[in-house]
Length: 289
Image 1 (cartoon, rainbow, N blue to C red):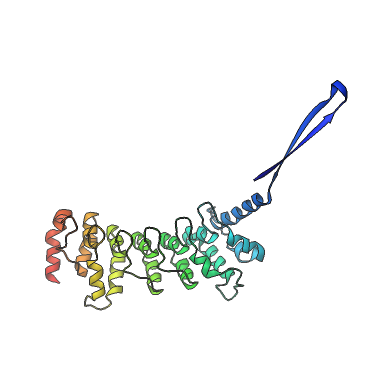
Image 2 (image 1 turned 90 degrees about the horizontal axis):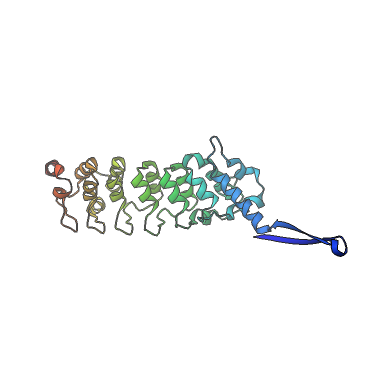
């Protein structure tokens, strides 16, 4: 918002009167505050090589300034913490500084409700943990979980942080989430589990991790079997998703873990239709189990 002040200056007498208009434009206090808030947000997401504003959040700004910074949001509803998390490992020190200043560490002064901060969502209903999981920053994900982040928070599409970590192959983040109590069998709005997401992207390490987590012994557990047999809204198991996506190694790995190689989706398509080259190999694996 701008305030425009107009002055009319009259000079001269009689027919020589001259009117001059002078215009002064002043920024309102709210505009100035908006610029200040954006400065705080830009510090959190500064991508300049070698830059890290962790020190500013940790000690350089006073308590009032820090409190204002925590209330700042950009046009997408993201806080300084969201933006620091989006930088991944490059923003880890800034994210940690924010959490500690709020009250996470021994030196925390409880200037802000840290649990509310880590659970806050942006305009897309992403929490900072969704962001850290997506970019693969396990260190920040662990700090967020310790501060009370909801490890199974969902986006409008039903995706948890685990869905993003699984599809992008961030095994270390998945381990953090699992240790914090996240549901490794969660389904999104299209019925896709973490196993489905990892299978479609060929994330072999994630497939092994999920199966070992669900079935820690040599014998296939009921929970692991349910995960292998889980179907998305198209009736596809994780193995069928892998076949349709052309992820042959993932399909083979799932078969070795005990997936049903005779499964068919809602359109009656099985391995023979989706990945005909794999039929004989998968049947052989199933016969040897």
